Length: 248
Image 1 (tube, one colour):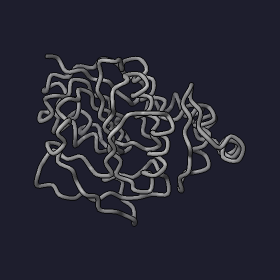
Image 2 (cartoon, rainbow, N blue to C red):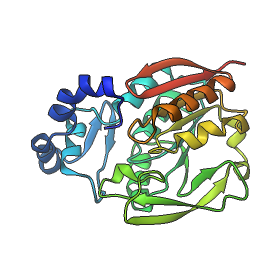
Image 3 (cartoon, one colour):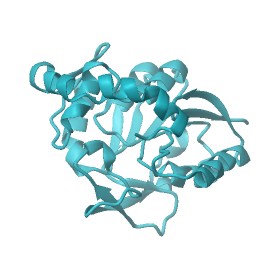
Image 4 (tube, rainbow, N blue to C red):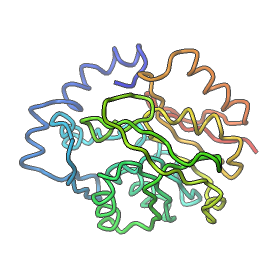
């Protein structure tokens, strides 16, 4: 789990009963099969979804933290960039609330086909990159480690299996400057983007999941200090997910 110690104690019983349950996971995988949320439908044609993870689709706790923040705070004024497209749940939800085209980055090539299918099926307007977004022109490639869980591709959590992804320098995206909201679900790379947030002058709203299983207390303090230094103020929080807004 990515929660801090106190939250972990509080949510553990519910986490394993509803969100991470083998029995309910088997029920969803073999009977329900798709992920239904309100008027959205998501196909799960992906290898490496652990059986217990299907339970989160059944009880609609998948991406619960980020979903709650987005539903409470995104409006038609937001133009969003999503780092970590995954199944397409957060990009689709963001589009359906804002009705503005979404820029999406997904580094895991194995997810792209299913991601596109879900975006098109839910009638979203989007631009999708199977690349890693970078702040510096000289950063050409980046190593990411793969795991048996499709959700856990990370540059920070090392495994024996890895892939090297081509970087895309943000200034090469002509419309990038027109977007004001950055949503990060990048399994530890939130640190990289927050460290370099000073370069993204157009970003006024920042959503991210903070991975306590990756960062120690000192690193987390540094992340929060960097946000304060760049005039970002905490506006909303759900467990280990945060919404910060830049004061102009």
